[in-house]
Length: 450
Image (spheres, rainbow, N blue to C red):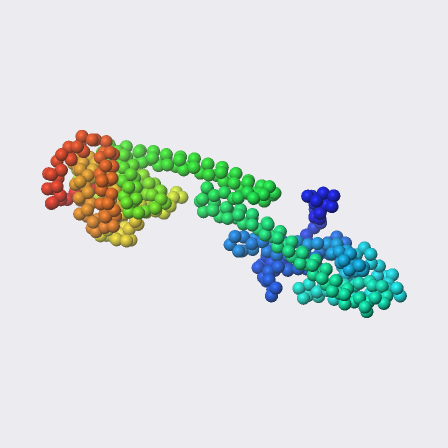
């Protein structure tokens, strides 16, 4: 394309000229550089003349080569400018004497006694490209040769520098907005659907950025809708699971609430809280496969029945394994019955080998089990349950999570009373606090079943 002299804000464009084999294009795309840097200059065929071009890299925000930009000008246009500045006709020839380009005023065949031809070697980046021929009046060569050469070289150097400068400017003007779009793409790929690409212009790149932002807004809206449907499904699944046993109705939701409070006291982040909520809502999903006569049995379980009940974490883990959830969610389902001393199940993990979120859920699960009614015993008060959890520090539970539980004591007590659904029992147990403190001094062996 070239500028339209009649309309400066438009260009004269011509398509379908075929692919031009630009020198050094492969070097630029492969990040190869010579001793002068990563940009190259050269000549390429262009219609009936040659194109003096600069080719340089387009870099993404990480500094990697994302493409190449070629900026050039017709050789005959440059020669015409040289002729205008120097006041003499000029032409360019290849080493094989084939003509590369010429100004409108030169007629080499007409040279004779009245004219004299001067041949000047032509180099680009210190590489020979051929030679320039200047047509001078006879007798003027000896006196004006030095001045003419200075003018010629100055004009020629200015043309090359102009081409290089324009190339760098255009490359940067394209690279910067493209880099912003690439950065926005990276942010979205990492899950940040709130990020938007800046729209800096009304050209094609600006329209691409605007279209990209519109696409992300639609994706964000649909993702939010799917997330809400996902959460609703989890709640429905948890409710269906808890509904099998009237004594544990709402258990999964209560464990999720207790775990969130405990995790906040332990200093866990928002990402952990999200995984914690999902994990708690489905932590007992493996009990779907436990028969009702075993799950609802009013008395103690036999050893064989206990072994069958203890398979529910592995069953639940297999049921959920195909979902695209964070690994922390699956670890909660599989390991919330592990013990700090290694005597838990199903893997017998001990200490720091137990995933930290599973350690949090273990305490919340036990708290709800002790403060809920069971066929074989009434619910324990919060104070008695809290004392038992403290007693099991470094045995059943992580000491640091138990310390966090103590720091959140009042908030946890209020949650247990609020979510018990039976205010009279809570008040009755509080009136008998003195009796329970005596029991805490010699705590009984509590059977915790969740």
